[in-house]
Image 1 (tube, rainbow, N blue to C red):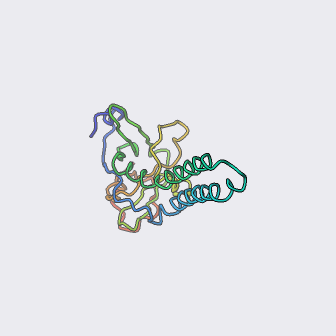
Image 2: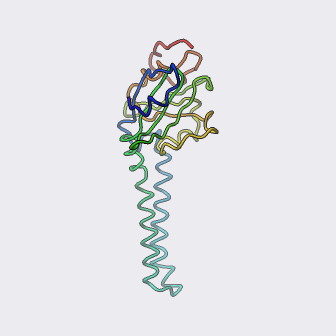
Image 3: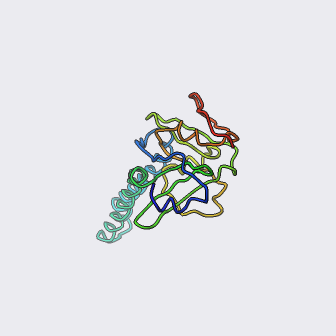
Length: 203
């Protein structure tokens, strides 16, 4: 375990399970809607660039050199937007780690000597949700599986804020879903678990 994470643990808190995102498929139903929305925006930027340079600029008498620069910028922006799902997937699989402790669920990213850290205390939640993926892996939500939580699945890990304390935290595309769920206290109801529920620890 990275020392920076060890230093963040509370007195007496112990790590029970560790994992990380793996084998994320962008067109898996769990991620598809968000990516389609992103790619639709990218297509709009590309279409706008073609319309501006090919139709609007000539009709409006705009200098073609300027129109070309505007169109190039729009195309570049559209290309970057289209690439963001792939960049987010690479970031998650290469940089994000997860762990379950005796007290909370933690997602973190270590970069150099700094750590970006998000956690949720079990005592603040009464439910968790499992979402199985076509790859055979699963997403784990501490809290309800809301539409907003699903849209956050492939996002960058943001710095912790006090107001996020009661918001769901998600582990994306993990292999050992049984091991992670085994760490949840028995007072947390697990929705969506279709396999034999693992023996869990008492509160």
